[in-house]
Amino acid sequence: MRLTTPLIAVSLLIATSLPAVAEKMVDPEVTRTLCNQIIKQVYKDIEQQKPKFPDLELYNLIALKENDWGYSYIKYHYVDIQGSRKKDELKFLIEFLPIDAEQSYEYDGTHLEYSFPLLNVKLVVYQNDSAKQEQIEVMPFVKRHARKLLDYQTQFMPVRFRLYPEQETYRVGEEVTLVAELDNLSGANIKLKDLSSRSVAMTDDPSKWGFDLGRRPRNAGTEMLRPNGNLKRKFRIGTFDKPQTKFIHAIYLMEFRGAEPTITTQINIVE
Image: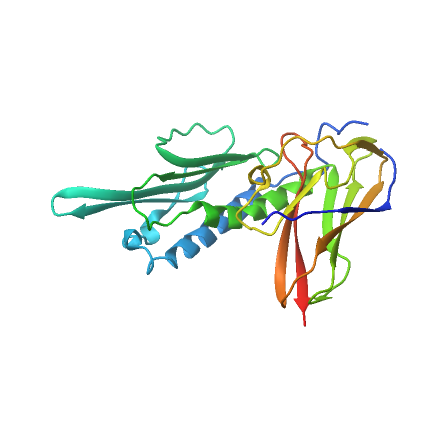
């Protein structure tokens, strides 16, 4: 589901170009620990699908491995044999490794290679094509959990991107409003895209990332943000017809050293 975001101006402060370095230093061990936690969460989610998919019959801890850089990864291969003939197979790989690591892969199916440049890590996901109607797709599980790394990377940018509901709870039928903010954490003026529906994309689908939102370059305006300055805008999200907890994922469509700020926020809907 793609969320629409009509714009209401709340406040505006002024902003030149992005600084060349991030303000905080990345700890490689913290990054590696987070990557390994993500892999183990993905492993558990896939394991829970074993009753639904016969091709996961041999999926167990043997599929959970560690590469030369200390990152956990998942590699699984199952061949479906009927009689003496191979009917089909399931093969997938989910791996984190350093961006500049030389690792060869053979792709003959769906694959994703996504870099987290500020963390010096890349994610490689591969799954072979299958003729079967019912076969697990691992990509949604990966994206759901790897989103934590997207949000973590945002901490090392000179601009802090925040998104939060105006109220702790909303009632069924009440219009939900979110507040988005940008803070300049650097000691220099920063030239930014204006904070609007042209520069902020939102979704409530955990398996969709920025490049999945079908977005195209937009003609967003620009603003100047002074050191320690703040931009704030309010977005109307709409109403909900039943009680629920909703997670909204947002991306600010401006790159810093190849990465875009992302954030996840929670909305609580009550009777």
